[in-house]
Amino acid sequence: MNSNCTSVPSSYILPLFPLQSNINSVCSRKKKKNPALSFHTPLMSQAPALSTHQEADQFQYSQIEEKQIERYYLGEYTDLKQRIIQYYDLDELKTKLQEKDKDGGLKYKNITLQFPDSLIADSSIVLSYLQESLVSSKDCSTKPYPDVEEVKVACKGCVDCDKKGENNKTQHTDKQTIWILADTAYSSCCIDEVASGHVDGDVVVHFGDACLNPIDKLNALYVFGKPYLNAKKILERVEELCLEDDKVVLMSDTPYSYHLYSIYRELKPKYPNLAYADVDFDLQRDNMEVIGKWNQPHDEDSIAFANRRLFGLTDEISNYKLFHITQPADPRLLFLSTNFSSVEMFDCKENCTVLGPFPSLMKRYKHMHVGRTAGTIGILVNTLSLANTKIMLNTVIKAIRAAGKKHYIFVVGKPNVAKLANFDPIDIWCILGCGQSGIVIDNVGDYYKPIITPYELQLALKPEVSWTGRWVTDFKEVIENGEFDLGNDEDTENDIIERHKDDAPEFDAVTGKFTTFSRPLRQLKHLDIEVIENQDETALVKKLSSNLAIRNTVSTSAKALQERTWTGLGSDFQDVDEYGAALEEGRNGIARDYGF
Image 1 (tube, rainbow, N blue to C red):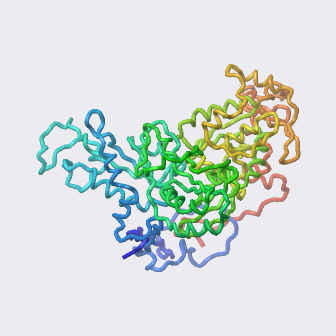
Image 2 (cartoon, rainbow, N blue to C red; image 1 turned 180 degrees about the vertical axis):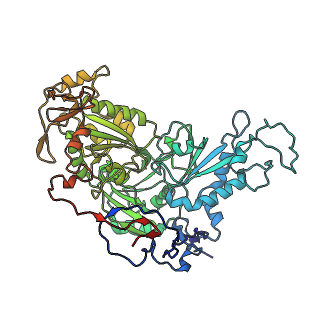
Image 3 (cartoon, rainbow, N blue to C red; image 1 turned 60 degrees about the vertical axis):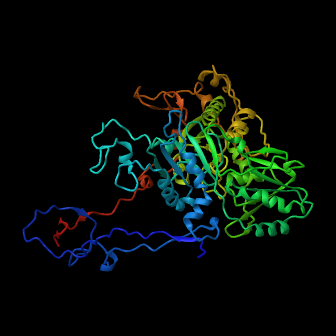
């Protein structure tokens, strides 16, 4: 039977027991009454119900409805397990995981499997297959698969095991433990070294779309998968949208790149200016490898473009239209839209084109101007796996200090509106994340403060306004080709103060007003301390000429608190002369025996 859906096994939830709706029993023994003050309440004939009435059938074990998981990327199949084995090239993966090290032992003992949310339904089948293939036949455990404790301790000898009596120091060096990372700390396209490090992982097997960014510590195996694609629909849409003389580039995410060469060969006779993009396998390092890698043609010239190789180009990239199979994440989409003349996207699930909306580059220009007059910049670290994260972070910190601004560093996994709203003194955020899906693009204005990239921050910190119209997210390119003013490594805080001591107020192009807090570090030496009688010399916060300072340092956080109109509970009634409601004695007694 052909199907592309399967059912999740049903599960159960624990019952909730109702509270007693009416309190009928009254203790005959007299209780000591404790008078209490309360607002006047009408007398009641009985104690109020502590919960609403509930029917008994609502508290029985209830079965969760089965949820259908649509695996459109698998196409039509008769055997789900065999289709998934073929889709992920699990036989090749199994062979790779069985490799030996120089000493003859297993190279990978703690294996972590990383799935995105869209593929997590396949994890149980992948895990089952790998367990059947990798678990050693010498395992003395009576269970089909070893649990966590059995893997970590030495064999103690089972009752019917011939190893009984052996020295407990003998360790099972041929055992492999497999873990599923059901939730990633940062972007799903990046290797999650943090989650894998919690279980001392030796290798991360990454499934699905990947950015192929270099990592420092762990070994990584990429399994893109080979999804089903309706090539006939693709050919029809290209013919409808493109003329024969148009310059078009075919591109997709990493899993669907498997089909691009065959589509390119099919359309090339009709479209002589057609080109296509393929995965750049040259980005692999010694600790990275792609499972199920396909062969690429070697008879055509190609150029590097982000994490792709472009084949068949005859002109500048900006003169080409882009036909992208699948809809990329917003950061990736913004990057592509700034490099191609137009972008058309094809939804492989619905087999139709997607016309937008696209992220706005003009909004990035506005956010860059906010960064020019921002006094406090929050550095939002949204990745710890990329190779150049530390270098990029140090570069941004030096540039902010050299500009006379303040900074705070936040390490946040999967930022959202609620998390960032807790830090009101931050004027603007600079996010360090993966350029494919680790950068927050606020298309609808949900976030309270703008979020920019290190490249945009570099433009904002320049003395003169400049805008290139580019969208650069690669850390290496920003570091090597950027124009950050880092000052001198030997600059002290006093040097920075002297550099900006004569700075005039800056004009904010967004609000149309002048601001004096765009460089708070410049004012440390030029504030006149007001003499306040009977002021504690050890006080942490002092008032400095209508500004707040903490230990002789301008505090933008204290300034933000000072400007707040709401200062806490009861602040709304500080200027109200009216008295509150009159209090009178109300009910007294214990909860089950009120005195009426």
